[in-house]
Image (cartoon, rainbow, N blue to C red; front, top):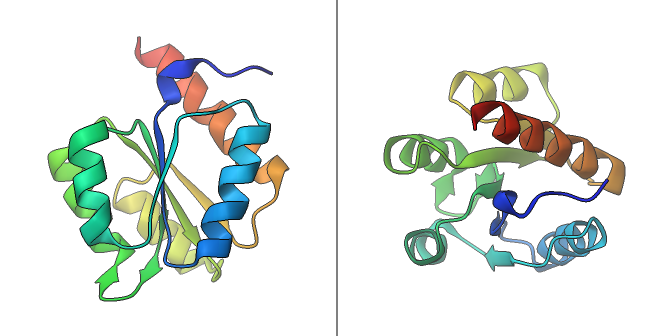
Length: 131
C-alpha cells in the first residue's frame, strides 16, 4: 500500500544511531522520503519548530529526558502531531501509560517492517477519518 504524503515529514527521536538508521530504512522501504532524525529532545525541539513533523517516533527512554515528558510537551504545543512511542520494554504498564498520555501508537523494539507498516496504516486511516 502506498501511503499518502500528509503523514510526512516524519521525525525519529532516539539516542541510538543504529535504531534511527534502521527505522529510517524501514520507513524509506515503505515509500516515505521526508524523514528527519534527532538524538535527544533538545535537538528535536528545533526540528519540530522548523519542520512541523506530522508523525514522531519517540523513544521512551532518552538521556536527560523521559519520553513521556516530551509526549506531554507535544500534546500541549503540537496537538495534531501523531506520536508513536518506542521502547525496548514492552510492558502493559508502558503501553497503557503512553496511550493515556495521548500517544497514537506504541512499537516495541526491536522494530520490524510489519510493525511499522501496521502503525503507519493506522495513522493514515486516522488522517483520512479526520479530514
